[in-house]
Image (tube, rainbow, N blue to C red; front, side):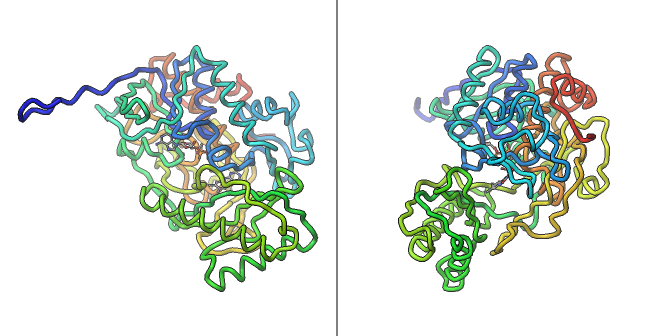
Length: 442
Ligand SMILES: Cc1cc2nc3c(=O)[nH]c(=O)nc-3n(C[C@H](O)[C@H](O)[C@H](O)COP(=O)(O)OP(=O)(O)OC[C@H]3O[C@@H](n4cnc5c(N)ncnc54)[C@H](O)[C@@H]3O)c2cc1C
């Protein structure tokens, strides 16, 4: 309201909670459930209209980091394994790749996938609602700023159809993938140089694969690139994951900085254009695609790599090589160094050695940023060097880190402590009682 030269700004609505989880992706959904189950009043906010992160916002069905490739044993249990059980994929007591349906695993990669990402949306909704006494969710809600006072995140500002709201949380968990909260709170962060590219995933139906399909698909992409119709790609980048006649394509590659709004927008547009080009090239020229149709692309282009915090401990390649043990380990990583180059690559999606570590410890302190005492950062933006994060960024590992963060935030509430000064050994002990790891030793 305006009176003469005075402008009255209505005070922003404020809500309060014990624990606020920003981002409901792989780390965030586990963090929110874990925080609520451990007794803290928890609010989860997510910019999409559903939880699941990469699994549902991009459509990627893989649970990598679950299985130690050489031995086949699970090194992540807890909520990640519970989700697989609730999806009807893992039986109770499942311990290794041999306990999973053979049609959903690739032993060569130590990898497994879920058959339907829509089921994952419904399941995460159900779990959130089952915990409604302790856990509230706001979808279509974006964290957009923070207030920092005396070394604490005093409030996170969220934007949604209610307008702007201040959320005052005693403990905050940043699971935005991009370390948004940590960055706005001025905690030190780093990013890889170069950043890994973004990829829009899409699906093509009514494909009748024949022996020549994959080779021809690759050849067509190489030609389209040479002739200037496709600037960048990984090829062939097609998988028959969901059905025998449906190919799931991860061949687009868009170099961009997804923490820059304009560049992120450009990448989304470029990814969409490239996916459409790839579909049309294959439909016109690849045996098996003659009668195919474009089903859909994921709701968002997938972001592999942006900021990571420089926390109280930094997971490094040396730690992976030496399998450094930590008393305050709260999760186990095991995926290979999966570094996607921002330029064209064929046959193998990753660059570099592809080093396969033995199951390694991830310290609680990789979740603890510098400078603020009531913030944890879980998922791909936890504290790790570029190389180490190429392993620790994957989905099941992110879930384990999220579960640890949620457990820690609830413990901090119970002990009237802050997550930044909490003893990680106590978090580990609590996780162990909940069969949530770490499981670095066989
Ligand atoms: C194209 C691509 C392919 C990949 N392939 C694989 C693979 O095959 N296997 C594998 O295991 N891993 C793969 N990964 C890596 C893996 O998916 C991620 O590293 C993992 O999802 C990390 O989990 P996260 O919770 O940190 O992030 P995400 O799962 O991305 O979750 C982040 C969530 O935060 C939300 N969010 C972001 N900012 C805000 C905000 N400001 N406010 C509110 N909400 C916000 C997002 O909408 C999202 O739901 C791939 C990644 C990409 C991009």
